[in-house]
Image 1 (cartoon, one colour):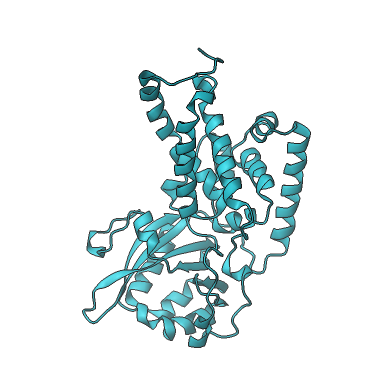
Image 2 (cartoon, rainbow, N blue to C red):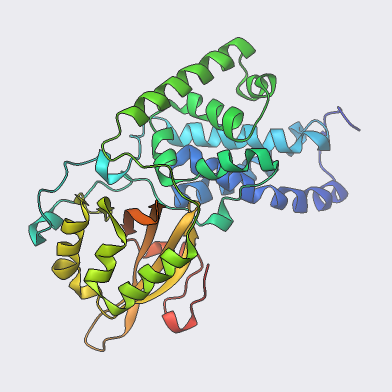
Length: 337
């Protein structure tokens, strides 16, 4: 039946395709996450992709075409979702830098859906050819995902498919129903836009280091003890901290330390569990809250490291992430992710 159009899937074909569709769910989630900049939107997009796939199963030309067919559907779902939507970005690109870490700085709140959201590593898998592993890891880092959002949606799809997933030019052209020349032109424009954006970053990242388990352990130990001097000692002098949905962001270890000692002091006594987000170390935080002093979900922190220090800290104050990442509301039941 290879190459023939299946007019109506029978029970046997459904039984065969159902596990194969499930096998592609994780890689499609990674693709949709890079396209949309949101783990929640990526989950919704993959679900819609599967629904559309089942509804149009009669258009599948041969079981060997399943993967490319699913990517075509997922791309169309993402393009539909992005139509008319403002781009997501990092807080440093959405607001002016705070002059000092004072309580009033929390008055500004970003519009819902304005910022790039984190992704759990196991939900956006990287792998395949070892030679491409570094590229794939870089492609899920928060700064890179934010940079992708600068691209027009179709250019974004071309760049992800070509430079991250290593599709051939003719495969991308077929998926987008365009010419190879047009696909190559879109790729060149996308690369130029990313290069220009990286050169003008307001808070540029250094060469990101491999996850440093010892540095993370020292940071978490200092955070648990709420030893501000020890925390600041682990930061780069010009480290950046932001906390979406708040518009405030800080640059400098000194200002971050002042913040920890002031408004951040309510985090004293928190419970933390290490995670891996966007290819970097991270942790979930349950903060003492309420008259009973019980620990409740508070934030998911993404860290970036370089030269043996922490260069960026983003605290996502969105407790929905706990459910999305499978983290319990009771920290006594938590495990490393």
